[in-house]
Image 1 (tube, rainbow, N blue to C red):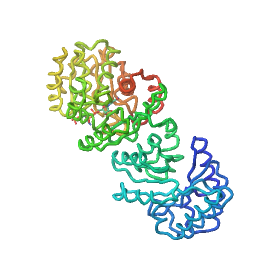
Image 2: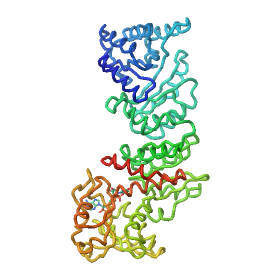
Image 3: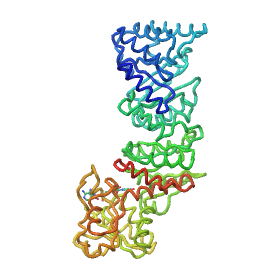
Image 4: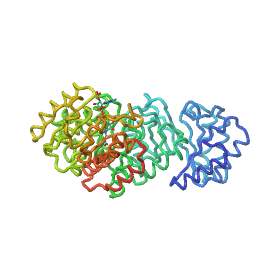
Length: 531
Ligand code: NAP
């Protein structure tokens, strides 16, 4: 939003340095009164702009701040169009051109200028809906496409589900001229990042998050270095993390950097899917069934890990396959496209068993005390028992631990292991070789950030023999790990598990070795964010 000429030009220079090819000056905030100072400032900015520019003076009903009349707007555009260095594009709303004589007149004059061979800005004709995909989208498109003077068509609406993005991609694929089609809000991120895959004329980015001109607009730095938008092409395969909430996941940082490191043609985005099973089923079904998306795999996180197994079971006769251990855990965290279907696996399991084995050797007959009975505890119990280990389960709600123990014991016996519940009064005699926290206790911003599931002092005598593994990764050193270190227990951090399970996902998707050192570096550098 233009506030002063120098500020706007500084921002444009910063955008240029950040790799932008074009800059948009939103003048609606400063051009409400038709005053000469504002006009002079805007034409000064356009003349001195370090990058080719779009000038937009957006009306309030389409998300802007312009409340003035259309005569003033049209005369501003005319002055800019006739200047020695006109803007490359002027963006005007479809609804304004259709209803305003001065703006229609301006559009005609622009066409005449161009016909006469004079330099003239090209017209972007746009339509916005900040609430939803407009119910009359097809009509709007028809009207846009009838507008011969529109050099570029722009459609932007609030995406309210991932499905709304697919319609935007279809619109790009079926374009009859350069087209911009963007979804606003958290659900629309995919349309912004993947616009180049479908031939979008451009995608917008904010210089900084707080300067975004539309909800959900990513920053220029994220577009360039996190999503590597300039490397996205029609052949790019699409991956993402499915969860709720998922906007702050570290997975896009890790996997996109990995793709870049091994020169793999993939793009990885956050895919928010609300928590209900119906949303999951519909959204994932749409992603995997879309013929044009090149969707090739996903990480699946809370609260959908059990949903992934359920979906795979429902679609088994359509070529979906579930790894036996993921099915035993009742939770999957990875979806992988295969030549003739989809595969569901749970990389938390091998991540846990690998980390434990590296510290305590083979798990056969080893005793692992697991706190919790949710998804992470189930993964830990399967990881231990599938190698013939003994899973000792303890949970706040004892009945849940007992039920899980019964279920896991049946699985464990097929692998030579066993599982049983350990009530609180028997913890001191549990004789564990490893302890795993699979509850959110100790998690920053969680239910009890200062708490641990157990006082390790009860095992003090065997401190050097017992590995303490906290699946919580934020903070890196939880209260449990802090006490463990103080008492001399060897430890495993949740961040190590994150890197390990991410690397296994990456390898399943790409068939190549994951750059684990790079993953570790990213997790270290971004350790304060959500994983
Ligand atoms: P979940 O399904 O919600 O289960 C949470 C478990 O913690 C339940 O058994 C619950 O007990 C127990 N619990 C919750 N609040 C408690 C409290 N105040 N006191 C005692 N017990 C409590 O969650 P989840 O998916 O298993 O995830 C658990 C943790 O694993 C997460 O916090 C996450 O940090 C971690 N995790 C890490 C990774 C990684 O890559 N490092 C991957 C996955 C998960 P009730 O049964 O009594 O409700």
